Length: 514
Image (cartoon, rainbow, N blue to C red; front, side, top):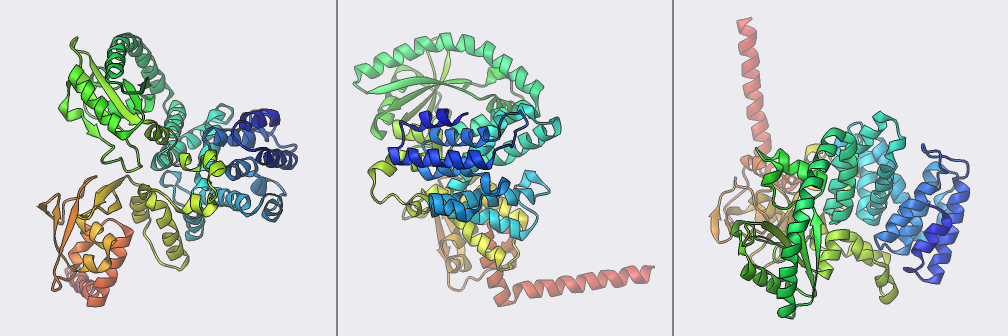
């Protein structure tokens, strides 16, 4: 990537004043990185320019693109944050500082698979960087994607290390941000280095299968096109091919072969509004026999990362099994670019109240975990001990949505219990929880919640928390509140005392037997 290429690429998307800023940033970065080379032998500046180009593709605002150009200057050159702030403003300097802190935090890790640094100071830096402005992580994703695209120039050991970290850390992070296309790109590239033989084998299998599927799907597509046109439903139909890594994960589940997987290629129908999505579903089920168990309504109940779509699998008269995905153009844009779609340059051009604070603090409900990071970072800096295992569950595990009877939405980690929900609503509700109804049915304390559950907490003022509840919560928030309540009632201390007596008796018994 050269200066002229990046400017030409960005030209259709940004105003003239913004393009002048971009040109200035390129000149500053080029001068700062002069003489530095990448492993490929190319000038180092090709990397930040490529990162910025990726950010343009994702439709990010101009400040993020500028920070992409400058993201390595503070860490790798003599350029200071103060200079960047003077030249490009506080926002750009803040983003570059955030990217630098994430890099420093990652450098402090001994075990990259957990994406958690070994020191509280480094962890605080990481959490604060993400919590203050999610665009920091979006820049890091662009940075990682380009590094993977040029990974062939790195030594073998470095390739494996970067690929493993990418698969176990950055791909899930992209997924959490709803950036489906980016997640798939990272997974494919990383998997091709971690297991090249399996990657090649599955790629060859896919090629053979797709040749047949494409021909068969052509007839189905024509039938659907005709039916939707007859119903006056404006639409667009295209194909979706399953990624190699997704296929690999599916084949790992049980005794399955590629012939057992129906969705190697799916047809995607994109329409103008939500009502048309359901109209299309009706048309498909009129044309073909639906497989009832494989109908998924992710529009009414989105996936934890915000993904929305209708999925249905049908059997044609010729016994061909075909999967369809139905969504609006807006849903499709989100499915492809996720949270990055929220920062689209068009919003900056047309909305007067577009500000950094609006972009970074007003997040969809399924992104609540981002704003919670700052709270955890503050606790860590204050000296509060938060076990690493709990952080992993809370921040980097899969998420579910559950609802209150009034329809309020709550974001919890997969595997969360009813008590986690109760304490998330309010610590007093958790404290006095007597029972639970989930979807109108009495629900056990020990049974985890599922995505889309409607949870009602039954409380009694006489009901108080029990020490055994510590085994029935997984979130840091619930555990912290519960332990504080148990300490207040003396329950934890009494348990510790009883355990001490048992340990002392055991010690004496061993001593006497000796």
